[in-house]
Length: 161
Ligand code: HEM
Ligand code: HEM
Image (cartoon, rainbow, N blue to C red; front, top):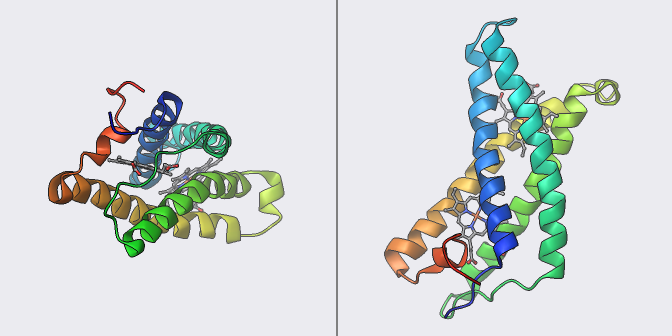
């Protein structure tokens, strides 16, 4: 059987992926609700708790990644695409660490004394992360439907290993 990511890596990947999608949904939705409404309040609360969950899971994930071997990239990938894949993955790890920290700085007293830059950076970085995730998903689709190399099974929960 071709090499796959271990069970913990796969579970963490999809859990964090779902939470990141929730962050975009909540972060971009609460603006449509009037200030002081319940909807806005719950979306904001969800954003904050899910964001802290991402931070905790990111720390666990990075620890796990550094102490466990990842399967090598599939054969036949050019140097350029290999570098692109590693860079994208590295930046995604960085994103799930830095973005919650910036979010926390935005809402805490300590952050307030820093001025507006944590919030502004958090908002700007959200677009960068969105682009990165889009690239990442496009790459997964390209592997699945153009190269047809079954790469997605390395990360899918259904496989044993
Ligand atoms: C929802 C759509 C997503 C799909 C279809 C997807 C698919 C995949 C696949 C197939 C791999 C394995 C690549 C390989 O075998 O080399 C992978 C790895 C990875 N994914 Fe995703 N992913 C998604 C969302 C995300 C999100 C939102 C994040 C944000 C943190 C993310 C972060 C990562 C990272 C960091 C790796 C590299 C794992 C490692 O080698 O350490 N993914 N993804
Ligand atoms: C990976 C985790 C996170 C992602 C992907 C994320 C994403 C986003 C997005 C998309 C927005 C809306 C940006 C816009 O207005 O266009 C936003 C706003 C915001 N997020 Fe997050 N967020 C994350 C974690 C957190 C955490 C942990 C907190 C707080 C503890 C937080 C607090 C905020 C605040 C206060 C805003 C409003 C910022 C402003 O308008 O000045 N976020 N976030």
